Length: 354
Image (cartoon, rainbow, N blue to C red; front, side, top):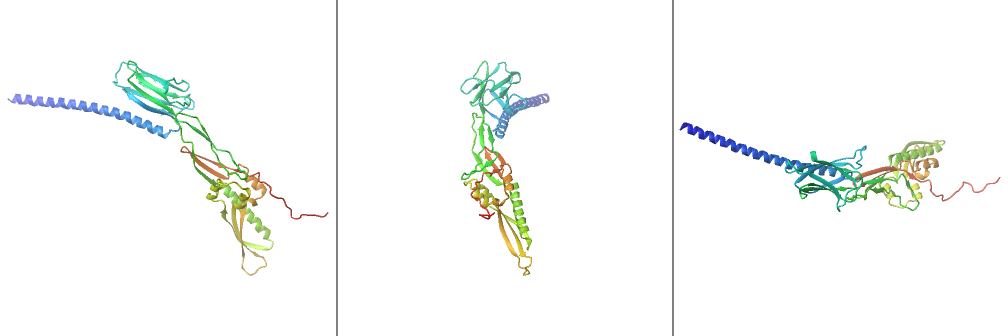
């Protein structure tokens, strides 16, 4: 009886061990299956994030369908010394079952069924390592479809769509030439490569501001004008409390309005400048009550040589920035004011006698 009980106990233990082993095996298979699925979706999510991050500088690959063959795609940017002007995609695929005797074939065609020229898109198929590399050499304006399929049964396949997101070249002008009666403009020249996916080419968030070097020039010219004025009266006046004050017509709002209204050289020369002030009194005045002189220096009062040097179209006057399709473009511009019209000529005396 004791032997029978021991045998029954051992059988229970063995049965429990077998059940545990089976459950462990099933659990392991489930984990492996889960891991495989997670790896695939993680790979796709990673690829999608990569595409989103550099969506304006790469072709776009999208898995359209997958029937028995799963794939993962990774994009590599163009190599400056290579032949893939727009980079390449490295695509690995998995076949169910892992051990298979069939052949996996590939073809690359436009969406309309015609062949894609190899100087536009080409591919290398490494069947031994279940990997395909798709090279983008030129811009294409019709979607391309890569099909991976089982040779014995073409219905077992995966199709991957490739698009080309158009790329922009933005050129800003070198300077701003001003014309009487015309609204000053800064017009970016936008050139597109074309592509199957169009991007937004609107110019947005334009910002105009006076360049700090120009403001410093105004400040220097204002102080020079004040110093010259003080020098002229120094023979019979004493001065004190000399200071350069606030800017006039040179606020951020003034810069914005400069690009909204027709240009007038007269307004430009007589409304933009800087204030200065000082106290003065006659040398023989013992009253002790100084006079206060408040003056505004305007651009039109600058010495001609200084003015033409500053407004030669090259010296920095205006800072400009804008956004096109989320990319910021910025540049500093000069102004060309060499053609201000002459409106009159006069002399101090109209007649002379020899």
